[in-house]
Image (cartoon, rainbow, N blue to C red; front, side, top):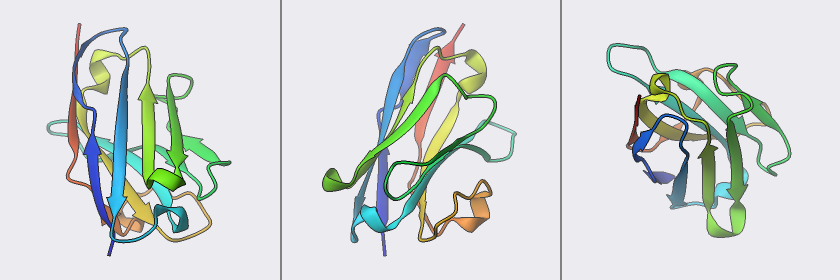
Length: 124
């Protein structure tokens, strides 16, 4: 089992930045592809980003490409999502997720482990 805990969410003005962290316990995160998803009120959970085991491959949703950057520190069992130039439409609960595979899934149901989420609110 892998337990994931997100942190770093909060309230920020449009144009600002936040860095989310996702720390794992239970097993080494180095064996898992990590994904970031978000869910706004009344909307379905949507893919944000994914990062490979080594941190050398990435996948981003078009809505965040060029603004968000995923990274990981396997020695710290932590992955990050740096979010820059935030927009009000980025407001959502952000989740990290983990799965053991080579590909970078964009579908939430393909991930096996989930954190509890952290709220990001961007004011206009």
